[in-house]
Length: 418
Image 1 (spheres, rainbow, N blue to C red):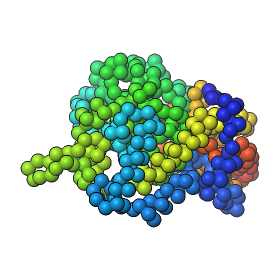
Image 2 (tube, rainbow, N blue to C red; image 1 turned 135 degrees about the vertical axis):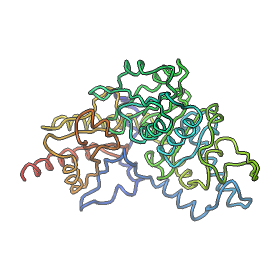
Image 3 (spheres, rainbow, N blue to C red; image 1 turned 120 degrees about the vertical axis):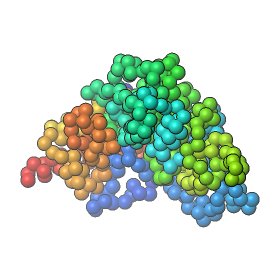
Image 4 (cartoon, rainbow, N blue to C red; image 1 turned 180 degrees about the vertical axis):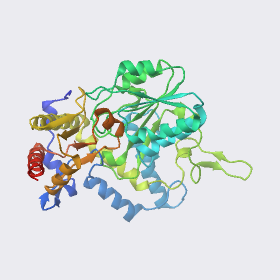
């Protein structure tokens, strides 16, 4: 793994003070202090985000874009300011390139439906990778079935890295779009998406990047990456559930047909012909998750105040520490050993089902995830049923990792005694 250590930055990062911002971290589970290592599934929320949601419902609750009264105007301002916060956070050129969705899955479905309707025909090809989350496989698979197109797959190595030689071979005149994850939710692999985009663009092929697992851990600049589409979920970056982002280059959003239609998407409506609004409103049908957008902006402000370099450096320390601890355990195999990794570690224990370990860890207050993690093709590659996955955040500690490692040893002993 490549670590981004910076001693001066890490010294300024006081995890014990930061933990005070997260009320849920003080609770107990099964009479044990909670150790929350399931951040890849969803992150916990700082008090600042919780307070923003409470403030919205107690002081600002109104529908947006339509009302002339003060509360509606205030809610609209908060919502649109949140759009600008996201724009700045990911380095988008224009605020109209930021579309609020329900999450990464919704964002990918939007592109698959709208792009596919206009640009994908019989015999065309869509490329994904073997390490994709199901949400970045199924929409494309369904599109290919509907259009009689072909889904092609970039294979991975046993260390969990993309086969870049095979990627280049897959590109052809029939390739209409590439959909790739920035960071694997199961393996932690950080993919070379900037390089992949440059290769694709040399052949005039657009690229969608699934950033669900990258936004919480990495500094993302969509203009630097030159991504055509980039999407992520709020709940994985300390914001509420039910809100997400689709970034699309302005040139693409102007060309895509409507995804859903209804209130908020129009300029004029008549029974003869209706005229639709420009992006982003054209892609935001109905009343949106207003408080979710506001909470997302607060969450992004929160991590920016901590410093993304600080977060990356500290989380790299946690990953290195956990890797050393788990590597020392007998009969334990880490799945995914890429040189570039983010804050995820997956493993199996010889002869023991992951679910059994997960249940016993929960009894000791440790929350991890077991199973296929919505990446069944990865499990097929390694010929395993599933893994035990620990995913770390900047509010986790090395002391928690020590308890986690000891809890694994206790769990293995208990299972083997049966």
